[in-house]
Image (cartoon, rainbow over all chains, first blue to last red):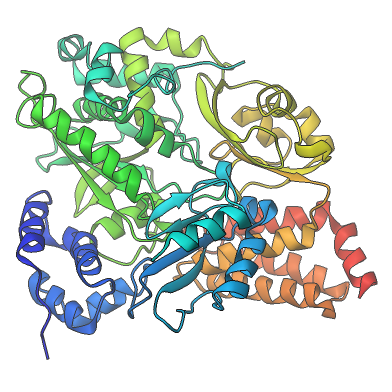
Length: 158
Length: 416
C-alpha cells in the first residue's frame, strides 16, 4: 500500500528545510509541495508517507492538504490553466477567455480534456489585477491577455 | 505626486541583484544600525508613525513594543506576503524589483525585536516571485550579509521563505501562523488584551512585506524624513495599486493625503476608452464601495477614508466603469468570499453561501424586492459574531453595494 517515497533529490531538499524550523510541524507545507512537485498531485500513499515522516495521523495530513486549493487531490492534465475570475479580471474580459477554452478545448472549470493534455481551473484573485485579464499556465503568469494571445499560447502547448 | 521611498530602485535595471542593490546603497548603514540599541531602532519607528501596509493600518512600532522583554524563549519575525486581497498586487513589486530592500528591512526589524529567525510567508501562486526572492536570500547568505553574522556583526539571522498553497485567509496573521505551524489556516481567537503573536508558543511579530521594506528608510534617515511626507495622522507613503477601467493600471508610490480623483486622472491616465466612472472599491475588495461622487471628494489617508464610511485597506483600488452591472459585481465578489471563507465560524460559512445563492437567483431572474432586505439582514447577522474580520469585511462590501446601488437591483427585478 505505502508505495510513495521522495526521490533522492527531494529527500535532500526536505532535510535542508527541516533544519530551518523549531518544530517539524512547520514542514507540512514544504513537505506536501515536494510531493506535488514530484507527482503532480498528492496521492493517498503520499499522505501516509508524510504522516509517517512528520509523526502525524494520515487523516491530519488529509485534513491539511484538502484545505489548500493549490494541492491537487487527483491527477490533472499536463497543462494546468488557472484562469483568474475575480473582479478586475472579470471586468477586463476573463469570461471571453473561459468561453474560448470551452469552445476550442471543450473543458469547463474543474475538467481535464479527454486526451489529458489540458486542465482548467477558475481561480480567485492571483494578485495580478494591473495585468487583467490574466491566467497562469503551469504556474507561469500571463498578464494582459486576449483571446488571440491565449489561442497562440495554447497552440504552443505540445 | 509620486514619491519614492520603497519604490526608489524599482525602475533601475537589474535592481533585484545584490550588485545593483549595493550600488544603490542597500545595506550601507548596517554599521550605524549596530551602533544603535534595539530600543532606539524601535523608538525611531514608533516616532515615524509607520502603519501596517497589509490592510489593517495598525501602527508598526507599538506592535514591536508588545514583544515581551527578557523572555527566555526565542523571538520570531514573520513577514506576511500572502497578498491575496482582490485589487492588491504591491508586495510582488518588492519581491520582483527590490528583494534586497526587504532583506535589509528584515535585518533592521529582527535587530529591533531581537529575533534571530524570520519567516516570509508568500502566497503559493507567486512561485516566480518566490524564486526571485530566494535567489536574493542566497546571495545575501553567500556575501555574509545574513547567516551566522550580519556583515561581521555578532548577530545571527536566518531568513526562510515558506510557500503558501492557495488560501486567502492565510493573510490573516493568526491564520498565517496556524498555516506555518502545519495546520489548516483557521484564525485564532483574539486575546483579551493586546499582545504579540505566538509561533509554537514563542513570541512573534507579524508585519506586512511593504511595512518591513519601509523600515530601513526610517532608521537610516530619521523618522522626520518619513513624517515629512503624508498627513499628521497618516504619515509617510504607500504603494497604491490601481486596476480595472483606467488607462494605466499599476502600482505607484504616493504620500498619504492626495486626492483620489487626481491619482486616477493624473497617474492612472483617467478612464479607459472614454468610459465613465461609476464606482470604486478603495483598498482591496473588503472596503465599502464608493460612488463616483464620493470618489471625487475622497482623500487617500486612513482618517479621511474612515470619515466617508470606507477604509484605505491595502491601497489597491478597483475602478468600475458605467458598463458594469453592480449586481454582477456583487455576485463576483461574494463568490470570492464564499470560496475563501475558512469555514470555522457558522455565520461566515453559511452567510457567504446564502448571499451567493440569493444573488444567483436575482441574476437568473428570480429576484424580488424582499431579497434585498434578506441580504442586509444576513450581512448584519454575519457582522461581529465571528473569530476574525473576514465576515465583517463581507458585510462591508455587500451591504455598501446593496445600499448605494439599490436602483440597479430594482432594475434587475423589472427586466425580469
